[in-house]
Image (cartoon, rainbow, N blue to C red; front, side, top):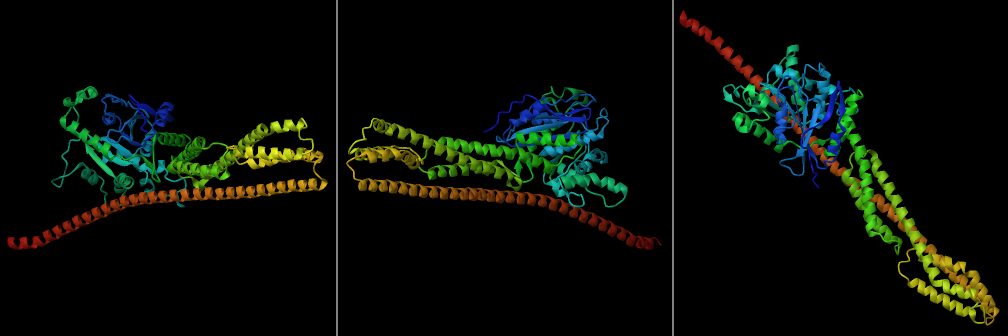
Length: 591
């Protein structure tokens, strides 16, 4: 079922107050209501570079995120706008607009670093917005990317040397999009036209050398290449005359530069078509409540002085969701049993069959909603609760059956008991009449439907309680000889022993059925757990293959660049050699 998203405008998600980050409960409440997976697009960049305009375009609105027109930064903290995804009906689009980096009024780069890190952690597409071209100044302004390994941890326990491999980050980092505003250069290289993506790749090429200057040049480029294997670049002309920029929200498309309008449309189309659903390690798709938990977990970690850790966030999320999955599974079990079970059941097996079918569905519900259930703690809790539910139903079944049988016996035998009190059977020949009446009433009792599994036991308990009455009537009957009375006593004892043996056999059968049911329950848990682990393993393998492919692609590009550089070096050496060879020939001609 698709959630109804009603957000007429953005809401502050993370407040930045006096250098401290605070989560806005109202924004979290909005996220908690979004049940479908989310595509999260975050934009980061220097203040007053037009980030908010692009986000408003993605929201399909002219106004929303504050644009501002002065040198002051308008957006503080991180603002959120949740809208229906324009191209994927089963997804929600979550737009995150961040406060401008480098705002001189803040005077605290540490704060900027956390905003940058949070945008990375929360998004599935990360947009870096800057003005002009990609030059060294632009790279220097992107120094936050070089600090990511100091601000974010992928695992709670890194390798023994304390180092985390870049693959750990690549597995959950977003796609990288660089938007260049007011771009005025021609896209050319070596006299050939190039695309914006090729321009970005050329700008990220590394210098050969180990000098401090070379290292400073290479570091941000190397980080971008390692952490963001999937990269995209868009260029934008100036939207309108500088004096009209403060009216951008009011201007129609035909009042803006036509190239800019087209470029903005291409950018939006790319984001809508290519931005992935936010996914955590293990292929876990993030919906509104999961994003809510991630926001709270990361901000809590920062405020407590810890580094936001992806693994810890996933475990915190798993704790919440697995607990909810157990409740959801139990609720499903209760619903199924409530709809299908009518107490008392005629046999224990009838109850156990209903329990097993409902239990199987409940385990399926749990498996669909749970993830990273370390040591199967939550599944074991579910199994224990289902066992208790089964035992409770068995006890209820016994009680309902016992109560019904007792009520039936009282209703059927009460006239006979009254006749006994009146002494109707305390006469010659009374014993035989009493036994005949007892047999008649027993038959009537046994013919009554839906007595349940206690029918025989309650009957035998009743008959045993009347043995003294039966014996008294037998002893007062003068028509029977002493021998006949002894024979009758032995017959009654034999019937009682036979009934006891039958009940013992039934008890053994019930115990055997319970043992078989417990084994079937265990096997069902094992079967579904094995299937889930196989699915998770396949998903993890797919994720690892994707990460490896991206890394190999980047390594291949680096090697290719190395070959190109080597080729250029060889060509230069050949040209220099040719020039040297030509010089003596020229001298000879002159002489």
